[in-house]
Image (cartoon, rainbow, N blue to C red; front, side, top):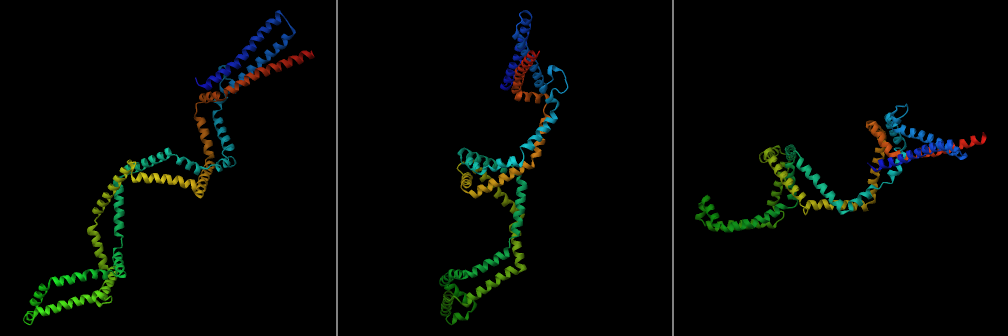
Length: 411
């Protein structure tokens, strides 16, 4: 038996016991009045008689709320069970009309400081650990529950579309123009010319043989001397190229490269060449394989880091949680913005759903078993209602005594 039921039974016993005392005393007084009559007996008997009437009347009233008195189906008794539907409706209307109103809701909502409460909650190490673990569980759940086949197909299609949309012509053209603006051909020539010098010096005999093979007559008139003169001229020509910033060879190279940049950017032929390169080297199968390998690598790494307390990802999550707490604590403007948004949302939610709350209360009460509802209410308020019976007994007795006294004095 619950504590509430014990208290109810206790107070019912007190009220019933008081009625029993009045009834027993009334019987004793009847006996005394018959065999040993005394003037005071009439006053006490009148008190007991009226007290019993008051006790019975209030017992009937209290009992009629929760059940039929003595099992007799007297009209307007067992009120809770018989009026269950109207109780639910009235209770819902009462809550809606008296509690869920702008006047009543606004003061409570305006006092809410959820941003500060959240910051203080996050500040606790145990709560930070809880957030971290939950965040890791959520990320892991998302990763493991993804439909990989659909995801990879989607990513592959997006990658293929993105690759074919890359303006390779423009990139190549701009790359050449960028190289020209930064005098990159000069640096290339500066690297090549010393190598050409060395090649010429190291291959004089081959140069001589090549000249003799093509012009045999030069071998008869001093081919080696002529070859040396040619080699010396080549060295001199290369030095001129290297030392002169505006050498005609350099100017010609720059002009050729500039024309090539324009041609690459505008030519349909070059466009087809780049498309052919993409088609040959980046086929859908290859793209899908690259995407799959990349996805598997990222997935494996993420799952591994989520399980490792010392991983970079876990540390990043910890830092994010700590930064969030510090930001919420120090950023007054952010606090005001968060609180304003939450307050407004709660205010609108409460007002927009006030009728729903009333409907929920009504439906809930209607779905309860009538007898069970009656018993629940009796447990909640029945103890206090027993004082009505006690007061009815005492007040009834006093009223009876008063009436008896007035009557005795007047007659």
